[in-house]
Image (spheres, rainbow, N blue to C red):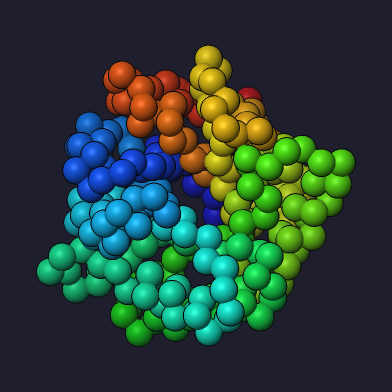
Length: 246
């Protein structure tokens, strides 16, 4: 898959809220400017696949970020179940867009996840979602060997049949040089130029991430906690657009 090109194709808004009602309200507000939404552990634990089905019914792409990490069989079953989540009353015309597994689970687990996703998608007649390996969490402190660690885990992800990784923009340039343009790099911890870091240690701006080679940027609190979320999202889109010109 070639990397996304338009700003809307690169922005992922993280619906890190406590209830489906909160998520639905944000989707309503952001729908005109945001096409991809992340459903993570917080929202998924609160309301299961309801939020995912709602997004699919609205024609949105879903990044299911549950960072699966267990024995290979359990992860394979979980990934297959995730691929099977669909919009209410749909005929499986569209499933989730991306999912995550943790590279610390090892090659057998990663291969099981990739295989399960492909088989389930084929069974349902839908596009296979992009499988992403989580390398190092952006909340982790910087370490001297972190770039080498990310690179090793990215190599494992690629060798295991995954489509890309979740990694800080600080390693994106290294990963792009190593794996080329078709390896997907999703970068969380994105902040606008004037946002606070929160609990993220390894953050960057949208412009910096794009310039370093990231394909997709995950933005949570700077948008969902903003007084005017749509304006905050548009600001990030503008930063992406500006970065693409250089």
